[in-house]
Each structure stands twice: as structure tokens, then as C-alpha cells.
Length: 268
Image 1: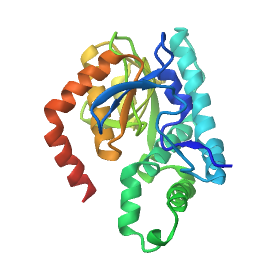
Image 2: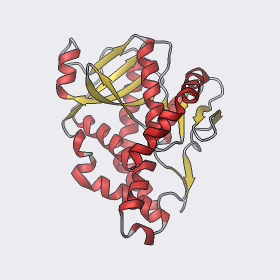
Image 3: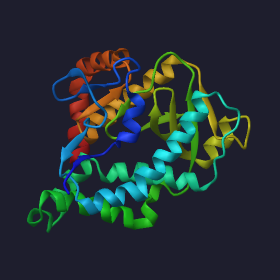
């Protein structure tokens, strides 16, 4: 039975960015350059985007495992607990989530339509399904470049909150190392980074926890979220509060020319 499919970011993550008072999710619409709010269960959806079979596949292999991981980490952070069990298996759960987000992006769909011989003869839904299905079949659903990455938990201890793009993740450079950040709540994100990165920057060599105490680090991360969303989908960036989105709206207005150039260059 057709449903309103979340095209890319699942409701299980979006709902963590509901405003505490309105219970709505604020989002910066990159097409209309406006800040709006709506329910998390309709944001980023399109009717009949995926087939029932693909909805079930994504739910079972990507979204449910990741939402369980995110809920466990969020509970740990929100309750200021001192211990969380993080078996190595959770790394693949995080990697599949990021990998699936890549295959579910507008950029990936555009590349398929431009390079595939058969795509023009398939329905829109068939192309949406095929792109994700074949991505999930390869390398146990993990994008090859992520195979040797390790997962960290980033705890935001500042008053500036994480935003989350429809794209689910973005890339940042830390200590000259490229890391992938996937926010799961306003004060917590999961990070995939090369193994040596964790061992070099975290004092407790066995820890997977990184604490962010500088608001500017969060501001920079949020800008990267906007940049990646602009290039991959040009859709929206979501947040629990308007303040962070107002800052991003101003950044967008001041840098749209260079962002558009970047978007065109990447699409070539």
C-alpha cells in the first residue's frame, strides 16, 4: 500500500529535532529561503516515492537498527550517564545509515538518470528503488571508502545546537582529517573517522566519546550541514530552534553565489 515515504532522513531522527514547546520541526527551505515548521512525520516525504518492498528493506536493514543505536546514544547523553556499551557491530549500523543516505540523495539520483541506459525506460519509483537496492547489496551495504572508519560519539556541550540536513550527514575537517558527521539530536552526533584519528585526539584511547565545548565548532558544523544539503539535494536543513537556522539563512544569503557554483561543479 503506497505511503508518504521519507525520501532520505527517517522520521526516527527528525523527531529528535522537534521544538520542545511546539513539538514541530523548524526547517530552512533552501528553495524558497524561508524558515518554516511542520510535523516530523511529513517533513521530507513524498507520496509513493519507494515501493512497499523498498520501505520494508530500508526499515529492516537501515532505519530500525540505526534508530535503536541513536536512541541508546541519545539516552546516554541526555541522562549524563558514565557508561554506554558500544560493540564493534554498531560501526556497520552507522556506516549503512550514512551509505544509504548517499544512495537516497538527489545528487545520486541525478547521476543515475544521466549515466544509466535503462533508467529512462523505468518508472520514477523503480529508479528510486533500484538506486538504493543495488547500493545496499554491495559491500554489506557500506560505501567502500567507509570500510575502515571508526565511529565516535560527539557530545555538544555548548548552547548552540546541531542542525541536521535532509542529507543526514556532512563532512568536516578536524586536525586535517576528514570526518563524516551525522547529527542524531541537537546535542549529539555520530562521527565516522579514520581509526588513527580517535587514537590521536582522545586521551582515553578506548573511548569513543568526544566533547565539544566551543560554540564556534558547532557553528562551523552547521555551515557544513547547509553546504552539503545545498549540493546534494537543495532541500532543507532542520533544527529544534529558529536561532541556528536564522544564522544559516544569513550565511546562505551572503554565500549563495559560491554555493551555487559548487553545486554546478559537483553535478558535472
